[in-house]
Amino acid sequence: MFFALLNEAWISIGTSRLRTFLAVLGVVIGVGSVVLMVAVGAGTKHAVERAIAALGSNLLIITPSNATTKGAHGSALPELDLKDASHIAGLPSVEAAAPATYPRSFQIAAGKFSWSAQISGTTPDYFAIRNWTFDEGQPFTGDDVRQGMRVAVIGATVAAKLFSGDDPLGRMVQINGTPYQIVGVLEPKGQGLDGRDQDDAVFVPIITAKTHLWGHNSVSSIVELIYVKAVSSEAMGSATDEMRALLRDRYRLREASADGFTIHNVTSITQAASETAQALSLLLGAIASISLLVGSIGITNIMLVTVTERTREIGIRKAIGATERHILLQFLLEAVMISCVGSIAGLIVGFAGGMAAEAWFFVPAEFSPWFVVLALCVAAGVGVVSGIYPAYKAAKMQPIDALRTVGA
Image (cartoon, rainbow, N blue to C red; front, side, top):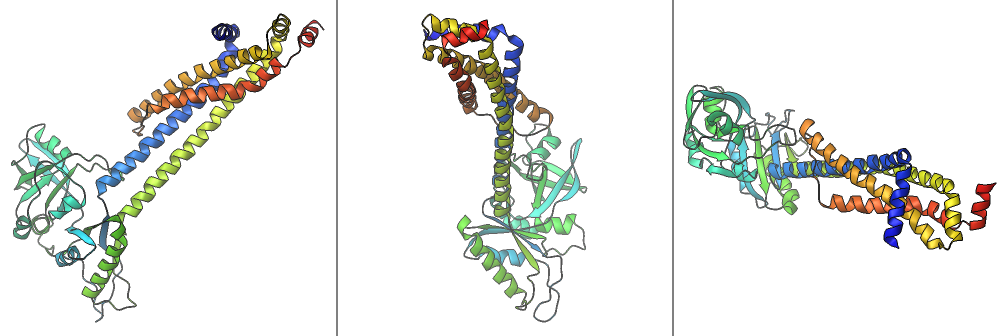
């Protein structure tokens, strides 16, 4: 009986192809929009999460403030220096601290290849703080930093541009015409939150950078920022307080004086970015769901018209013994079939749209097998909700009234 009704429903929706197509189109647009928006939202959220993980866990960054701050004796607050980083590393709530410089662009050459890369000066702890892992080699050592050795750690992009697939470990590169030996090659990290390629980077000992690359006027002990890793996420607040107290004491700042430095809680900033991406994903999904609602209303209208056109058929069926249950089931099946066809087509459209967005517009999109289950559940739900009233109306028709209406 069920398969007979299913066959009749299929034949019925095929008799008015244009009307059925318009009803299906509404569901296609609705389901396709929801699938695409959810996929883009999930991809964006995961991209932000990967960028957060790449930044480093429990990360704090200290930078000097732009405004000049006066110390206890009225002198200007000195810039941060290497000793500050050393003292901070010894605080109870701090796991590690690494002084660093802002990256500067230099032309790097290796044989017949050359590449313009961003070079930063730092210390070995920087790589652990920033969650950098090594594909080959290892970080330069503390002795390399103290002695100003010309050694370098390079990112995956620099390795690919300069060595074109060859092993770069132990090879020499020319920076400002001076040879530097490669002691480590970093594993790829991809783009950061700002969209820049994190792998297009070179790291050298901080004293080497300041004395040999930045110029003779650069003071070797002064640093531009300090990366700090707290012992845990719960200790971020304690680490911030301890560092503030330490630096204020070291520079003998008056109680009423401003800090003269800024401590950035990168973890809280990136968590806010992740939450924003998740909220955006939900908002996009909610907006796309409106299209699905419009599609379901379209199915309801089509089914109401169908019931009106088939009043004679309904009267004859009931006159020869069809029950209300049979009539109800037949019209519900028609609505569900329209919705299923539209949902499957919408699923394909959503997948295609996500792949196009990723390939052409570089918008991350992530699909899940659950999308198929979701589409089928949506199809059944929309079909039942859209068809329940027209089917109920058809089932409640009295045979004599239906035949009299047609014959009038």
